[in-house]
Image (cartoon, rainbow, N blue to C red; front, top):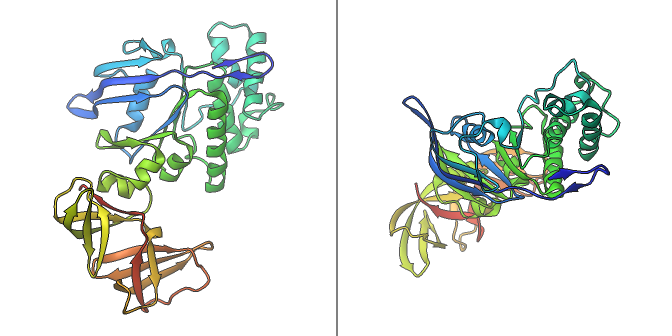
Length: 362
């Protein structure tokens, strides 16, 4: 990417290729050997729980940590042994790391000035970067005079002004409230698409990952559990961990029989459903059910259903959340009708949608 004098940012991003990259700290393996290709001009999210290795992997891409083995390429150039300053990548940290005694303009220009650029030119480029993130005219303020969302934009502008091949985000929205997080994730996604820069984004928030990503890499125990588009991971999880980490999900056990072609018959208590067997054999299998795919209705003897009992009902404004005790276990269901809440202790008939139910590996 390149900032021009008229404020236009020309598109361009670099491919990031990891080949057998791993990181060890003595006997502890923080990242097991893995291969990953991040296409140029895309936003790829590293998603996973604390301690899974996602931030360590991001820091290796940044050059803040040296890999223990493997090779790393950015824009086709082998950067494995290069320092952070030699890689042409920029990072937006969780804390923003702004200098409190410097103006916003000086904060944004700091990297350019410390690299030897004349102050006048650095300030001119910093003004362009601030305008790019919607902060034109804010350069004379101190960080303490800016809101959390504005400080986050300043941190992004400071990264953009260096015209990086790759832009890295480490949990950038964790310090913001829920409403501002939604706003800022939309702004980050819009900015990335406008600039065409390659972005690697770390978060533990599933909704954030779904909202901003071209591709999500779900990590577990220092390795990749599954990688794919947001739709792929939500609609076609490979295993129980990915299914339950990518949004709300019920994990139950069922019986798979009568496999023919790609499908088999899954029995859940008194209900039998045709489902893709996904390469699993007949017998007991793990099943994941999205809460929005569970219908909580009145008992209907002629319709195949699970007989359940409402154990909790929570009004959420736009919907109602239920917990229902059934023969296959306690199910969490989301009803789009918040007006007619079923009372706790009442009977209910549980039926299922034709999507959002998966047979998965353990």
